[in-house]
Image 1 (cartoon, one colour):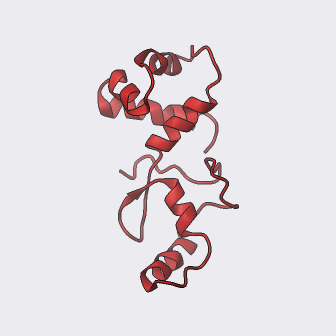
Image 2 (spheres, helix red, strand yellow):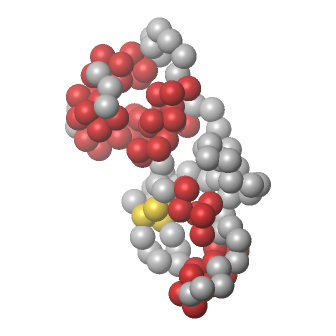
Amino acid sequence: MPNGDWLALLRRAVDEAGSRAAVARELGVSRTAVSLLLSGAYPGGTARMAARVIARYDRLLCPHTGRIVPPEHCRRMAGPVPTSSPAALRQWRACQTCSNKPTGKPTGKPNANHPNQENAA
């Protein structure tokens, strides 16, 4: 995810929730922290806050299942070929040609090459 897109996720979450306080509760931070982030006046580093926002609000529409999933689901499902379940193999096959498929190896960190489909929900 390109740097700064997490702020767009945060803004959208506040718009959808109707208040900064509600989003702050979901993230486990203070309302003041959310306000400072949105105004660009947050006094500290934003890497940990960005990770919280991405983990909570970054979601994609899975074309195979029709469900809203986190990007980590795509990384897991598009990984090694499953051999224990026909359903898992069908999902894996669908993931190989999906536009949501992340590139590169899973790192546990947000993938800059993974599209954020903000209007999927």
